[in-house]
Image 1 (cartoon, rainbow, N blue to C red):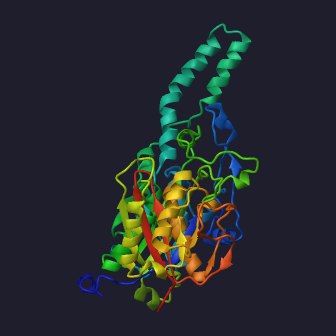
Image 2 (image 1 turned 45 degrees about the vertical axis):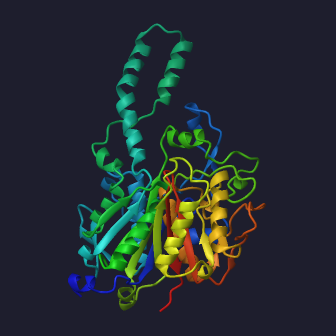
Image 3 (image 1 turned 180 degrees about the horizontal axis):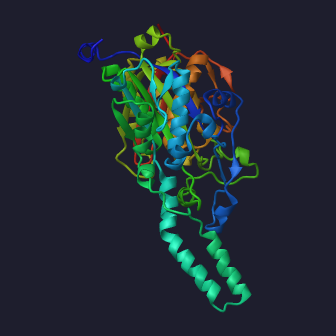
Length: 466
């Protein structure tokens, strides 16, 4: 069908999820991730010991990513040298999503390690990815080289030549040893640190020439990227999209972690670290900082997916977003714009609140956010709708969180099962929180995100109805 004829059709084409790729603290694949969700597994570890050389912290735990063998996943040495970890995560998750969608990716240029996707019109395929910061790891590492390399060498010479006592020389060398930086400036650092590299590299990697957009609405970035991909397919702009969110927030000196810690947003220590992260619980103390994560979804027009025999996981039926215009650091206490976002998304999906059985909440574990979110959910849906927090298992993956939560919501609809809202012992409200992994009859669900700056975004998903 020609582009012109497609664009004259109804603007409400149906959009389905046909593939999901995931890497996060509790899984290196979608299947491992989902199984660990159902088992209530979470990864909580002490922060890197060397961070204490540079600062003191109120929070001492985080959710690290598992080790990823990028070479085994087909990522070349050149790609690893020229890409920030956030980009590598996106490549691997996209490869899994494409494969799980039943699409075939074949090598196009061996030297560049680029591929093409069989059967897709690259000009009718888009990339819509979200990230909070993008390549901040590469930015900080190369900045450390720029600031420290020459001075460290000069001080080392002074220390060697000067007549210091052994004790003083040892103290100076200890300080110099703590000034870690790469051996050289990476000449590709500009392309590594740009947030748009997350989307651009997927377009290059898979020879996709349709719209290529990066969304940077902080913790709502993943949700927004999927929402805009959904709109692009529904309106006829494209037929297929890679959409999701990714983040990688580790730096050698622990500076990003410290920034959140100084803002009093992170979970506080308790005797049992595995119980410290507790969204919607009376004893919640903040969110669990995650090293990063990624989820990439393949979205397609329903009939095209059916025609090629693709798996259909769930349908996206609505999306909307609002802005608080209140504060860079906190959501508005009245929750008015969050409520408006939810009602707009439901209206876009042409359903009423009573038709929604499941809410995958933003659920960070911070005192104010959780309380406001509960009030809004109760105002919109009443007290019977199932409420869950995937962050109770993963911690907060920032720009990846909305995409990971959309993936969980889609899998919950497909398999009619929800994971536990972990460590919820004393709920802050008399609502229907998910207290165990169990089967439920779920026809419609919403996955919602709120972000620093005041961005609110929500996706309405439904069980596949042919």
